Image 1 (cartoon, rainbow, N blue to C red):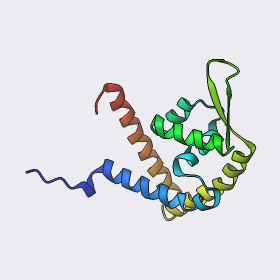
Image 2 (image 1 turned 30 degrees about the horizontal axis):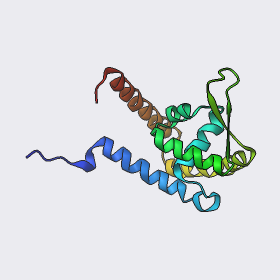
Image 3 (image 1 turned 90 degrees about the vertical axis):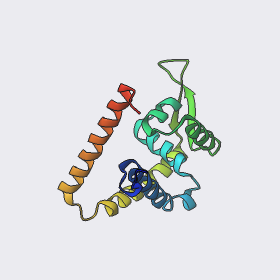
Length: 151
């Protein structure tokens, strides 16, 4: 039987680390604002790229459609986002932050930046740039594999 060292397997390590980072960040806003990780991701994407359709949110976050749909429904119910007909394409519904959603976004962004600074502390500017370049390289490789049908 071939030995497989999961702790050295890059996709596993990325997934575990991403989940830990998400939970660490969620502890900084969940109790105060009453939003979940998927809801914050929707708010963050809308704060940067609104207006967007739900499919646009799926593309920007890489979350599955069902998770985005649940987050959007919850945010609509809480009055944190609005849904309207797109002016350019009447068949399309787009999402934007409400004033209340914008206030939450503005309150959480400094916390996101502080967490990022804490995570990258000690890397220095060059190390951080190199890390981001490596992430870009991995992302490009994955996108190329998806385009080739490689799984």
